[in-house]
Image (cartoon, rainbow, N blue to C red; front, top):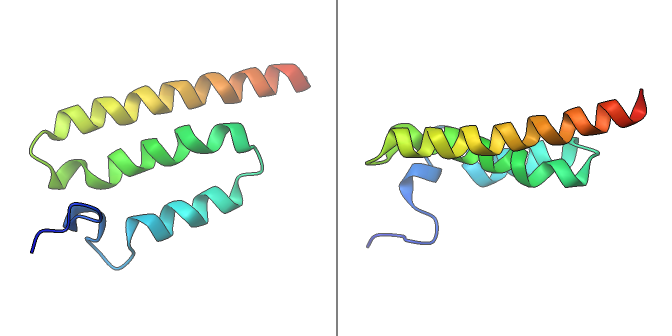
Length: 79
């Protein structure tokens, strides 16, 4: 039976995607950056196992660009 909640493209490899994302999130002390960080990683994780790889890469890029803006803003505020 197909698992629509936790599909195979999140379970490929030795580490399940959710476990990696939770670990990465726990290492980031800047809570406002975490959604962008883990969403970019999620789309990069699965792009090669989906029917529309470029779509997932563009989604990852969108989140990465937003993360760059957040980190740039944070760094500019502290310097």
